[in-house]
Image 1 (cartoon, rainbow, N blue to C red):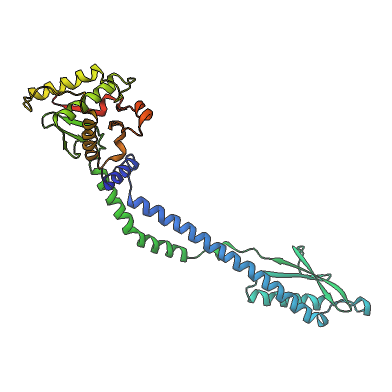
Image 2 (tube, rainbow, N blue to C red):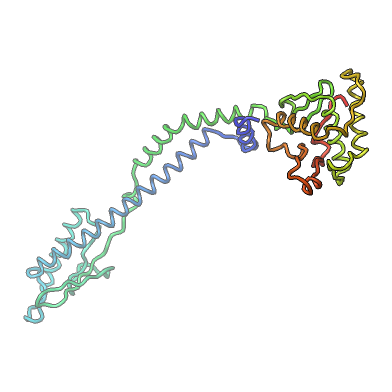
Length: 329
């Protein structure tokens, strides 16, 4: 099965019970983009507002420190009383300046003089040389909601939706094609042995390899013997089991019936290693594209000499009858 068809099959299974609607997708995308853009804008505006408060507070401290000698403040060490009206006028004048500059801060109290009945929300202490500490009360204004709103996030979300819309439409069309395309089926391969042309192949479309009468019949017998007698060991130093020979002769009789030969039955016990070599060579060619599937079908080779060869087993490890199919049996 080709890689493309496998990918198509996987995608089809993934979206089998789902439909992709480009209109819904672009709507969700636009809403998501709008939400993220509005949140980012609001957080940016909030940060700018807080930075303005910090700057306003720094300017307030500097201004009061510079003006402290002539705004009517009391000097206890010099027995100078506070000029409340003058201090209040200064506070109001300073608040007017802060409001004109759009600073989010209002001065409410200097020392003991206040311009508001509401208690200040925050205080700071200002050092005055020769006059001690001066308490300053003020309030920070929270950012109004409209300062964090803008048409810019809406414009950006519309622009992003227009940009991504063709991609969503292309995806919708592609998935529609995948849904309508017939599902690819994975071929379950087995070894096929065709008596009509004396060939073997792995899978319906595998490489077709022909075999001579003797190795073909003996290999067919090995396959059937492995299913019927899985526990029997086949050793080249011992006689070929009668059951295996009977199976080989049975298949040779079938070849005679099909008109492939008129010769007498061969001696399947003779030249066993040559017969197995011919079988292995044919299997190597038949499994040239599926080498990892070959082992169960392959008669093992003997390794070593002497005592090691005496334990060699050339039988097959096939246990499933559906692993091979005999055509013309």
